[in-house]
Structure formats: structure tokens, C-alpha cells
Length: 522
Image 1 (cartoon, helix red, strand yellow):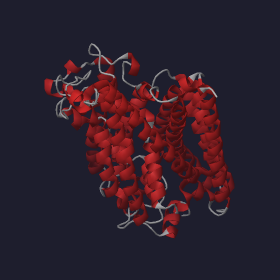
Image 2 (tube, one colour; image 1 turned 180 degrees about the horizontal axis):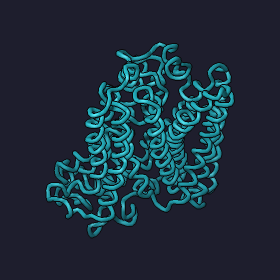
Image 3 (tube, helix red, strand yellow; image 1 turned 120 degrees about the vertical axis):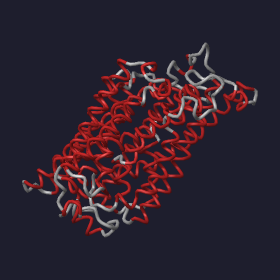
Image 4 (cartoon, rainbow, N blue to C red; image 1 turned 135 degrees about the vertical axis):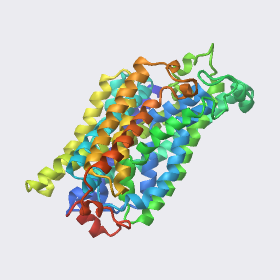
């Protein structure tokens, strides 16, 4: 059997397994005849914590972000760890801290939580921004997946993107959130194997290139963009570099809808904490540790030539993963192809689910309930919206020839226009006027600063002490602008109503009836 035939056989078998898992969740969902929408979006809040933790790690094993993170470590050296790995590691601790806070308000979605605290307008505004962010992320991961798969299957990238999309459409329409969790667990097994094998390939290539002296060689190899002689320096770009990244990234990541719904999806706060600890361990190893290790190996296995990354890994170093896969035996490459599909499908189902949630649950469903629509008709709309979001993401991915500006802007919008309003839920003086104005100004500041930073300015446009953070200030500027506007506007306008402040409970809401009454049955 040729390598090409074996690759296609692996794709077919894997897709059939995903269809089968989707059918299993459809059968299980059929047992929950009452409140089918509550089942579709949050699996009736009855999933064990360990499953939710594995699912979170699985959804965050996204080769787009991980490949980007590897590329930055390759380009900057240890300083590049601030771009993704270190903030991610800090985030793992934050998740452990926020679990009881997230569960203090009865809401399936973040926009719904904002409505309870601030009113309908904030729900709609946050829902719109959420759709923008997660459709951008979904299409980006489809784009990356298609780019990685096309050389294995000898077909255009768009065919590979379609192959990734169709199974996700089917199993998400069948089982919703429960299908996402079940398939994520199966996909995580493949991903774990993928990452271990990739780490072995990276270490083997680095050892061959350095005659076994990997770390000594690494310390003496200058990176493309990092300081000369500072490959292992964490502050090679100065202190403004990590500061800008932490201010910009962490607020958005800690309030991602895919994270929050997994915290809310556990039957108790204790189970949610189990999920948080499970996610901590798996994310630290597979999303942070192993990718960083692979990136450092790439520096010596494919060292810069004339101050630039070699052709083997691409000028932007975004081809580190395929470069190491090509060094493996043919049968292992088939396994790695399936691993790529697992990584990307788990991410696509996660992000497309939280792109569909604000449309169906926060925009359409309230109107349908007001007009007396049945549970079944509302469930049908939820299924259709899930499919449409994946199809829309595929369409966006097909129009791109690179990740594009929208992908990067969306990270800033997540922090400035969604995360900051979410974090102020717990400030009793915050009101709708402050939240709305802060969110809108955060959006404008993020987009405007991105345009200036990437289209009009250069590193030398900034004072010397700020030049190290060039390229990432747009995220922090959006966040700070949102806060600067939100706080005074809230203080200068009317106080929120008592029932809005009281929507945030003193203790986590673990009672299933109380949660249902507050979020779906009330």
C-alpha cells in the first residue's frame, strides 16, 4: 500500500469513527426528552469534571496557535515564551481561582450572564462580538488544518478543509455540547500520541544536527529576531514585551466562552475544580511544555541562515510541525495525519460551538420563547445554527490565503470588548452605560491601534524602552481604553438596579433546579 493510499484510508476510518461517536451522543440525547435545548447547549449540567478538563485541553491543542507559538520561540528564543506559553501557564492558575466565581451566576452563556447583571443591550452586544471572535478562530484553525493536510493527501487545501468540516457538522448537529465533549476525549488520545511522537522527532533531529550537544548548541545559536547571544534570555526584548502580552492576552483567555461553559457544565463546584485541575496538568504538558520543547529543538535542527529562517520551516517559521513530520517513517506519518485531524476537529467543534451559542441562545432563542415557540422548534434552530456556523467558517477559510488581520484583531476584541465587561460583573457599581461604552471604545481602540501599529508605524516609532513590545501594543491599548471608559461612565451615571446586582449570588449555584430556573426555565 502506498503512503498516499494509507493516508486516505486513515482519513476515512477516522471520519467514520467521528460519525459513530456523533450517533452515540444522538441516542443518549434522545433519552433527555424534557428540556432538549438545555441538553443541547450544556448537557444538562451533568458531565463529570475530568471529561470537561480533558475536553478543555483538547480544544486548546489547536495547531494554529501552537504552531504560531512555536514559530515565535524559534524567532525570539526564550523571550518568545512570553507570546503564548508563559501566559497560558499563568492562565492555568487563574482558572483554578475563578471556578467558584463563574458559578455564582446562573447563565449558560456569557452574554446571558451580562444580561442578568446589566440588561438586554449588553447581551446582544457581547453576543455580536463573540460571534466575530470565534468565527475568526474557527476559520483560522480550518485554514491551518487544510494547509497541514494537503501534502499528505495530494489534494488542494480546500478539500482538506471540507474533510475537517463535514464530520464536525454532523456530530455537532446530532449531539451538541455532549458530542463535543465525547469526541474531544477520543481526539485527545490521538493528540497526545501526536505530540509525543513530534517531540521525539524534534529531539532526534536536534541530536543528529548537534552530535548530541543540543542544549550547548542552543545556548550559542542566535535566533532571527532575538538579541544576539541572548537565545535563553526571558527578557531579551525588555520588560515592556511581557507586560504588553500579559495585559492583552490574559483577560480574554480567562473569559473565553469555551472555558466558561465547561466550568458551568459540571454538576457541582467540586466537579468543576476537578476539571480545572485535570485541564491544568494536560494543558501544562501538551499545550505548553511539549510545544516549547519542540520549538527549541527546531532552533538547532534548522538553525537560521544569514539571519533568516531556512526554507525547510518557512520564512515565518510556521512550518516547524510538517518539517519534523517529514523525518518520520511512512507509517508513522499516517498516524500523524490522523493526529492533525484530531487536533483540528477538536478545536473546530469547540470554537464553532461557542460561535453558534450566542446566535442561537442569545439572539434567536429569546425571541422564539417570547413568541411561544416549542422546545422542538427551538432545538431545530440550535442544530441548524451549529451547522451554519461551521459552514460559514469554512467559507471564510476558503477566502483566505493566510490567517489575516481579522485573526489577530479578534484576540484583542476578546480581551477589550468581552473580557473587561465580564470581569466587571462583580463590581456592584458597574452599570449598562459603563459596560456598553467600555466595550465599544475597547473595540475601536483595538482596531485603531492595530491599524497604526501594523500599517503605519515601525518599532522605531516608539521610545527605546518600548520598542521590544512593538507588534503587541494594540491588545493592551484596547484593554486599557475599555477600563478607562467603563469605570468613570459607571460612576457618573445611575447605579444598577438591586435585582441586577443580586443576580450574582454570594455562593456558587450548584443546585440543578435553581440553575435551570435562573438560566433556562425561568
